[in-house]
Length: 93
Image (spheres, rainbow, N blue to C red):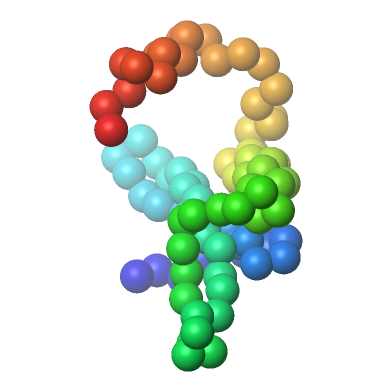
């Protein structure tokens, strides 16, 4: 697995930003996780969030948006998407 080009962390929640290559040129993706110690005192990762870590997830995601926009040389998206987002019941699970 490639190393992230950037990491952002707030509390136990972190975002790792990766650079990818495609036929259309480079682009960046982000992976967000929460770290915790289990009962055996071993570090684990999860994608489940309680109320406190959910607020950290939101802040980390916002910072990741800004960093990816900076890395891509784009402006931070602050407008509604051009295409409407599907309703929740239209998204396959």
